[in-house]
Length: 160
Image (cartoon, rainbow, N blue to C red):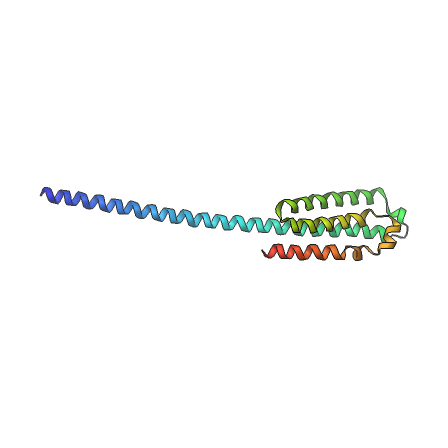
């Protein structure tokens, strides 16, 4: 009888131990799955953030180039340089430079280098003098090479 009691106690202890190990293993696996899920969600959120930053940079560069084109195509260069135009140009430049700095923070140096070159080109056409504008040609022609370089680097970066 005493042997049966000990055997029962050993069975209960062994069963409890195995149950505990099974629960521990299942909990660890669930934690790992949850960690992988959270990592995937974080990676996706970062990807979306980076794409939104690229979209914003391209949009701001386009806006600044249009402001430059408005002045370049105005019948009277001096009349186009109104206080409103200057305020819009300064605002566009400031927002473009902030966006370019964020590219420096969130992307590889190669993409930032090309973003910087594109932003510099946009800044140049925005603030160039009439003689420079006539010598260098239309805004869009001047910006074509740096824009293409930036977009190719952005495409390569977004694909990685």
